Amino acid sequence: MKYYLIAGEASGDLHGSNLMRGLFAEDPEADMRFWGGPLMDAVYQENRGGRALVHDYSEGAVMGFFSVLFRARKLLANVRSCEEDILRWKPDVVILIDYPGFNFKIAEFAHKKGFKVFYYIAPKVWASRERRVRKLKAYVDRLFIVFPFERAYFDRKGVPYVYKGNPLIDAVDGAEIQPREALMASLGWQDGPYVALLAGSRAGEVSSMMKVLVAFADRLRSVPGYEDFRFVVAGAPARRPEEYTAYLGDRDYIKVVFGKTYSVLGNAAAAVINSGTASLEAVLLRTPQVVGYVTAPVNLLIARAIIHVSYISLGNLIAERGVFRELLQYYFTPENLVAEVRRILEDTAYRERMLAGYDEIRGRLGGRGASAATARAMIESL
Image 1: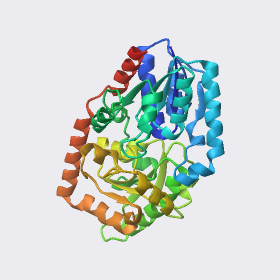
Image 2: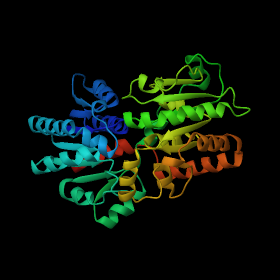
Image 3: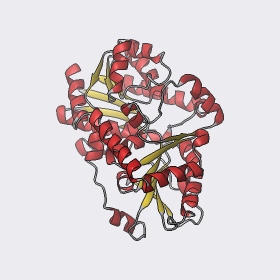
Image 4: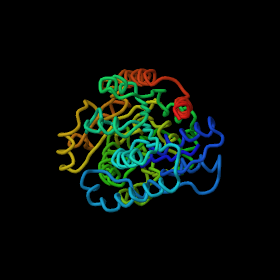
């Protein structure tokens, strides 16, 4: 069968790559074409070879309401290009992976043209823009969800779904994590504790986060006993090194690393993480964390009007309580980060309670094999 997959961000590229691996395993004759990134392309090269990546997500990911408006012409051009490519290629199914702003437009188009439409990693209609539930019912043939708390929500809304667990467990458990001593040596450092810094995958997130993260690093090192602490920034695949290093100056105690996110996160004494998939990865790697998020004031006002959840981090949403701290907007300051990271590092009971909460979250996500099970369910539906 012919599968046309569309992912628009780093997390979608990760989940798309694991889904593709499952589809190839269940359907050895599978033919694919996709919008995604290097992880999806690597799976395709392993199984087929040649060119099937239509568009790299790093060319189009934006954040914030006004950033989307400023790039509207480019985004609409991408939508038209995708629609034309689908028509030319004539897939058996179009598989949309998260990225709702773009993918809902493709869902409507593909449905009206008679193509089967699957949606994998459901749009977060339970958090905001609930009117999109109508679009799910109208344009999507089968919805595949990955979070346990979504089941009750979609049951209430009368949206049929398939739930086979969360694919991130396979991604994390199957990752090769470099020993800390080797990681430190690769950075030119002696072995020792460090704080992982993850500033997000989009350019706007990185620019908003890095100023605060660098100030936090400076301030923590000024605390007695932390003078030798170091910090490792895990660079996102779609970003360039200079997007991070522009904020570092001559600080030799902050290094930027690409392609080793799980090693950086898994070996850290603590982590400061932009809200997103990385915060759930920290849970599965059992790295104590504090989540931070900051955006333009106008974006915050709009978000407050449309977002209706108690937490922004997936781990806390799954646990239905605050397992770890979220410092948002005006609370995301160097001083607050220092206080929270020190508590993580110095208060053993606090740290153990957080890790116990992590175990609870993992338990709620189910076991391994979610990507393969989802691929089988998709093929059975077709």
